[in-house]
Image (tube, rainbow, N blue to C red; front, side, top):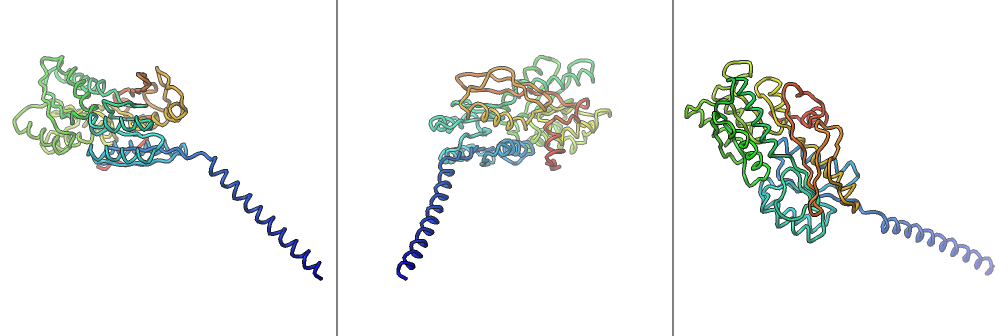
Length: 367
């Protein structure tokens, strides 16, 4: 009897030990997977604002590019406050993401936090508006100077069509010059316009605010100035041009007498629609979606893989422009996306970022 009890007890103990060993073994495997498994790559995006269609699509483009790779997307929005943006980047640095992407509100003051990122060994990347100091692993920007030139050239062409020569009065509402992008657009625009002595050039500082753009153009009309063409260096503030033209009763399509030439930079859905309706003449396109795609591609294929980014032509399919340029200086890669003109000849091409954002992604422009 005792022997039977002993055997039963022994068997129970062995079963329990076996069970315990299996549990411990299972737990150890789980720990091994956790310990050796790769940590998800985290990309932080310190954005300047979401108050415009352009910046909303920029945010979505970066987010899609990151998450389509199975990475983690973290973001912050500074609402055009450079001090707030700098603090948000500092907060990201404390969390030690794999890379930080930002579009600078103030290209000068952001240098301090870019340098802090350099010290922490975190790849710092800028898109759209860059930093003038610190080391950037990747800077994907628009050829803003060329965009300004192209906008001015488009206006000159229309003035020649109207008068037979390059003459008339051109109104330019330029943005805040602490933004490197807006400053370059103004410089490029003026480099072309100033070549024509018979063009009267009216430059007005508007801080990139639609209400100030509207106010300045209405003031010019009230002063009795006959304006032949208007331009704004971005289309969010460019809405002020449209509102002023409508309010001052100068809103005519280009086949009617009294039409004022309208050329902008960005080529968002609203202004592409105005081109199709004849109220705007052309827009210099800025491929906002490409910023996120190219930055994340270069991070994945080169920077985070510890490989040098190759210099030279960079082919990017499914875009209207197809090829951009990469230059390398001190291991910093500067990618320059080329501008191009959208007019009635190509306004409905499905490769435009405006088409993709509105027709494919479903982001309707708030009119």
